[in-house]
Image 1: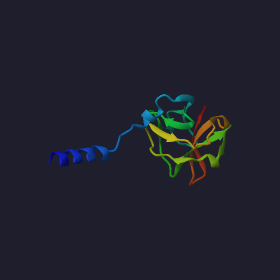
Image 2: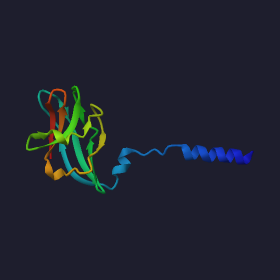
Image 3: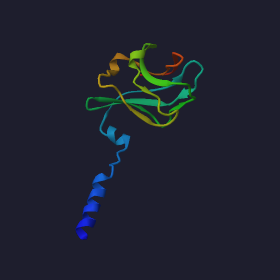
Length: 132
């Protein structure tokens, strides 16, 4: 009976998921860029972001102070000198406020752009920009 209890305990421990906070993934990463959002087209958007590189992967981190007044179909991408590039869209916006961490595409190069852009795909409109 002790062996059965021990075996069930071992299986329970082995099957339990290991919880990892997203912030733990970034520990030891290198801060590449930072900036603050400014709303566009009548939208109210504020808060800061960081681009962090860990290993060969870049992450976009919207900080705790990020706030967005909402719009249909908001997506995240990048611009160069106020010219948005639709091929940089990599994710929908998960939340309208608070800290969020997004893994950027493997081939992302922050030197090719100088703004993070919130884009409304439905209306083909700029919602916010954050220069870096």
